[in-house]
Length: 149
Image 1 (cartoon, one colour):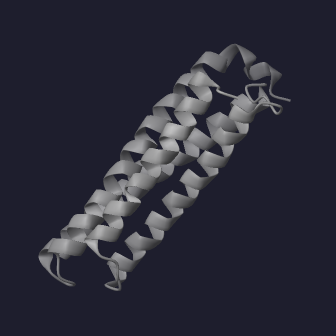
Image 2: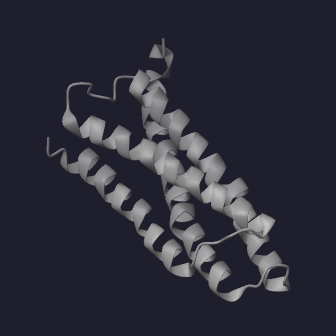
């Protein structure tokens, strides 16, 4: 079904890598914004509004498009045979990417709470959550590059 794309595989892979880099940058940065937002801004203040604008722009202009491009390019590569259905590394990667997408969704919900003035989480909880994308990234990179199983 995707055979006509075989000649474009290197370009699709490059696009996938660039989209993942942009997505990961946002996944690392947005929780840090939440930390500062939770710790330093009071609801309705000018600083609160500034954080809301920064968080929304990061999510809607960078993170959402990057995630979509990463998924689409990844699915195209799977369609072109880049996924080894029998190898453990492939399953570690896909489960980790699904969990990463869940983390993205969690952050999107938290942004909406900040926008509504209903955030109840502390800066510490966002600091802890900030480690989730890092751990998932480690699983993904090791699974794909080292292929330990």
